[in-house]
Length: 150
View 1 (tube, helix red, strand yellow):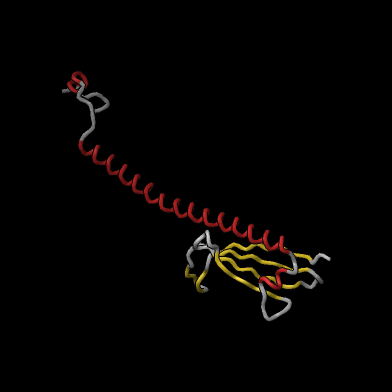
View 2 (cartoon, helix red, strand yellow; view 1 turned 45 degrees about the vertical axis):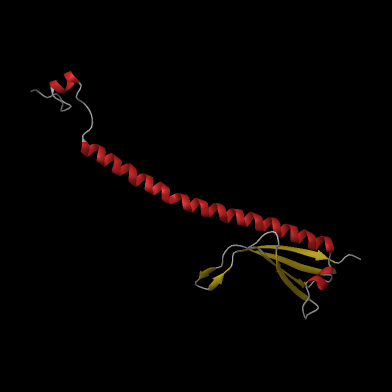
């Protein structure tokens, strides 16, 4: 039988005997399987990124709420709410009842400018991680200044 340029015989063309061989089908299934496995490996990374972004957003909202409460109470309330042995420095810490896994730390100190205090609110979230420098706890810092009002 004579073959044309595509490698098919006249008999194949005449009776519609076209199609894929078993080897070709197996190769395509193998390629698709590898591609799907590679795509499936990306999903857990996306979920972890989503969880991390969600925790960071909650930490920011909690920190803003705590900072606003500190600003509302004012300059003089810092000394009683977050005291220490020094009259020019104070620190306090705690956790959020409604948000498990989130902790806060408030630290304040007098600046060189009279009647002005620097306040740092630090919100801890997520699981501690080991790094080359030691244990690292993910956190978010918010800083503001409070002036004494007469």
